[in-house]
Image (tube, rainbow, N blue to C red; front, side):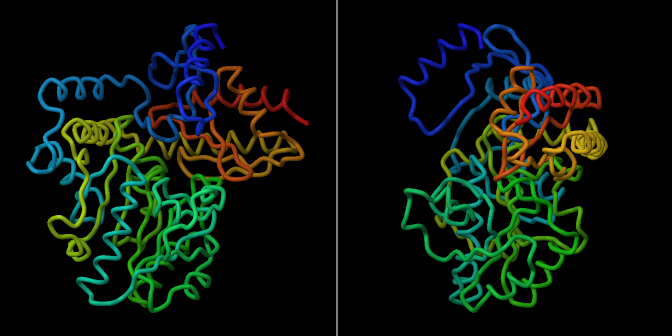
Length: 404
């Protein structure tokens, strides 16, 4: 940490609420897969703003689009139309199962919209008093009240009780548990195709198709939270596309969709969209021209540069190189995830994760932790195998230094 970084850290401590524990670094610029701090030291970014910076930093197409849109129009509200929002909605529908899109500003807002739509659709369109949700243990769906209530991790509930009623949590990747939990009050099943904050946990191949079949048989909706897994992260546009016959009724996106500009989206079918009517739900800033222009550009670049395919190819290489670390270090357990959403499970008797993350950061590699036992690597979709080789070398050195 440079003296300038330390000075910023002290200023932040004096004026900001204490709900974050940021590393003592104040980044000032980025280029591709690299970030630079106040002292101009560079860091290989395998965190990407927690899977947000899909195009890396300072991508010329994205920065140009943001600048152009800022010169033209930033905000008009949803009392009027704007072309970037309509164009982005059209594009998302063309790429997915969906017929309709609602825009918000974040993943938790997208999930709130999804849950409100599911409940309202059941009551007003289907005429059924179904208001409950079946969600998964170790899941994460955001920080607003309903979203933390849906989240299956008690640590996120602490101090916020009573939570929003209506959520039943069952083990992830357990179809029998979901079947048993669905009853006459259930309106939807809510699930991440790969659990992110829960530890980068990938379910068995039959899980998502099984949920689709179960929801059809029991007359409930299927909601996918693809806030972290969507927009090319796993090597397909959306992670559920790896499983045939597993389309949802509602899907949520955020993180990578704006490439760093805040945006969230809730996608749904025409049928389910009937649950909303004018005034039923809204977002003042949702769908603003700047965020939607950024989202369009991200999708354009991913398609033009073949970044879904690159995420699959380089992600497979990353997975193999991480496995080589597991083979060499007894304190590592397994490699998890898919594409460029990877987890490295750590045995706490071999390594302290926080110490390991700090040791890697000191050598110029940024990564995060997820769940009770995993290191998480979510680099930009633009990386190549050379970036992976550099990251693995740094991580190997950090592992040697940090072994208990």
